[in-house]
Length: 256
Image (cartoon, rainbow, N blue to C red):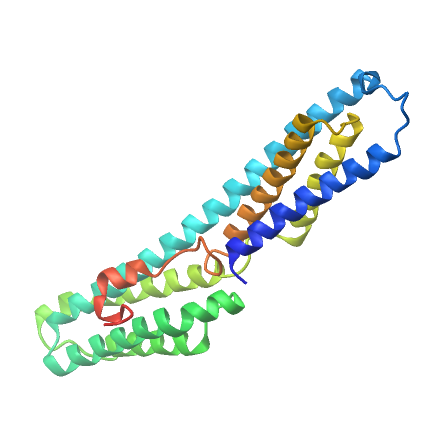
């Protein structure tokens, strides 16, 4: 199901539930009910609950957005390190250079075509990707430099392979969901309490009140959807992309 369809259904459902409760509640209210009799303390509590929940929502959005940005940075670091390995292999003999570059290309192609989908579906990297990166490491470390020029290139190549491995590990750590289940429980419970406090103000069936109630509930649903969409940095609509790999290795781009 499309993320945008999920958003539309969530917002529509939130509005429908709130407006249905308003209509049902209004039918049970007597003619002598006066909405102006709402105690001041309830208005104050509603305001404070709204402010506190807004702060919590803001922190949650900032947290998942920061996690998404960090995941994208790990991808950039990994792609840059592999690009350096690909370029610095120029110092090695043709057959060694071709082996290193071929294995780098194979790893990148696998990451962007196979492993990326695995991260989106399962929230984890694959053993095959780890194996391909280990093959690059062996290509670099098993070769014994024969000249001073090759010797000078050896350690930087080893360092770049280590940087790629470190970035891959960080990418693996950020592939799953960001928000713990207990936080989601708090966000959803807070949404129910915040929207429910609207009824403590004795909302009536005037057009303005119904419009505001519907828009408020739809806004809460949208913000929760936004957090959910950012929660999996590689798995949903607004996710980290493989663009850094495509930038350094254009031959790995789809259709090429």
